[in-house]
Length: 141
Image 1 (tube, one colour):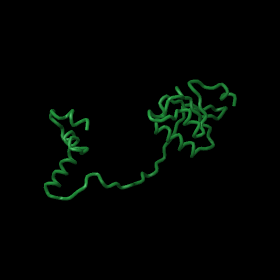
Image 2 (cartoon, rainbow, N blue to C red):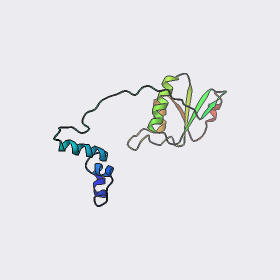
Image 3 (spheres, rainbow, N blue to C red):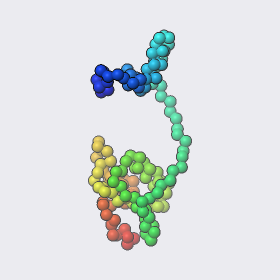
Image 4 (tube, rainbow, N blue to C red):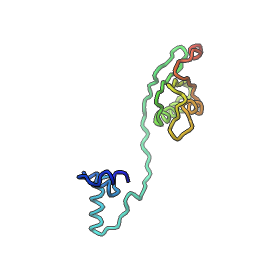
């Protein structure tokens, strides 16, 4: 682990001590040491318990609303995974709304490892999009 080498010859905080020994905190390491001292069998972070976060209502504020055309415009430079998930949910829950994107660079990939670009994502999920400028034809709709 990268931090073991870096922390080797320094005075360590309790959290750093925990990290060096494979724990996320000094308290976890302390409890593990106590359990070992008491000869208690245990597993560390082996059990996974699934849970559902309660649904929470959020509010979306589009960047622009073209009142005559009834078009919502969302401008995006960085289009994060959270943004994409949010926009999918909004589209699912408001299928009657015409939401469109103007990307600063529609050819940007959604992540380093993905071949999908912002424009490809928009088309896949049924959003109209433009690159850098407001298309005049949108104003004539």
